[in-house]
Amino acid sequence: MDLSARLAALSDPDLPAAGLMFGEDAAAMLGTAQSLFPVPPVEATPRQILWQPGRQLVVRYKAKNRGLPGTESDIVAATGDAIPAQFKDGDAGQVLAWKPADDPWLPGLGSVLSTQAVSDMLRSLGVEAGPIRLTMRVYRPTRRAVIQVAHPQTTLYIKVVPPAAVAGLDAMHRELAPRIRIPRSLGWSKELGIAVLEALPGRTLRAALADGTAELPAPGSLVGLLDGLPQLETPRQVGGPTSSVPRHVGLLRRVVPECGDLLDELLERCSPAPAGDMDDAVHGDFYENQVLVEGASITGLIDIDRMGTGRRIDDFGMFTGHLAAFAMSAPDPDRVRTYGASLVTAANAVVDPTELRRVAAAALVAMAAGPFRVQSPDWPTAVRRRLEAALDWLESADRLATDETSLTPASASPHRAARG
Image (cartoon, rainbow, N blue to C red):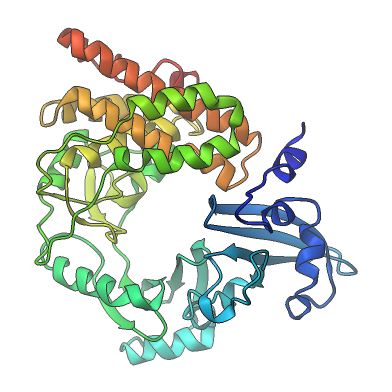
């Protein structure tokens, strides 16, 4: 079965519109939203899929239009709980479609995609008038967007979230920016759900890893970075990767049913973390794209939305799992694996090595649907590789449980993931 047919075959009994949104009739379905198109689309290719089985489905399409050669539209369609209450009509098969600028969950997005509106916003913040360039760096429909603003004097980032979340986001940045190197909040709007953040120097650690000649910070400096995280004035508990495994396995059973036995094993062995101390300050989503570097120095930490109180080992395990996944597509896989193995060695000195590997496995399960979500070429194979890598980390944990001498970088680099 080719991938388009495989995608079209997916279904969700509790979301009757799912088959239409995945299938070849998606273009016809979108065409009924006539206000979105000058002429109906002839083709709609999924480029991003956010699916919570039984609850909601959001698909972002690249739509090609009849009679307009070379033109494409970026369109989002949603069903289930992803439709805001004010738009629901009581039909379980209802689909709501929009252009990104009109995302009903992100009312500020349209404004920050307008150069005039952003120029006015910058002037209100004391930035002199000048030409600006807007680049959408992140867009996860219904959830968040990040717009980069390039100005002759400065670079800024505008984060767009549902309005109910923006006050907490701004408060966290204002509380923590004097204490750790994170972007300062320069202003925010409750009505629009936007926060304007300063740009920190450096580039992501992922970009540095992909640059085969770049100097990298010592993995031990990541340990120091986590050691320096402060507690929030009003702590909030943050769960780790092991707690989310059942939810992710539920989606994966639909996406890669041929991996059922493997998923059964992972679900059994990636059990939720044992009860214990949850009083460490944690980032909550710690991986190589959240750390900014210049050469061997760490220059900042970004995307702090999930910071709170939890287990330090979950941050290390998340980072380790992400590096294992990144190595599967990185320009220089060995460079990434070597760095990941060094991080595991550094982390072994401060957290339980066996539990670290279990958390890394759980992180890989949590990320396994990623290739499906972004519709990577041959996504079924890519999903399976991440699941197999998770099993390798569990086997590594089992070896450690019986043989402490296996604490080596070689044992920390799963053999199936090492196929690159």
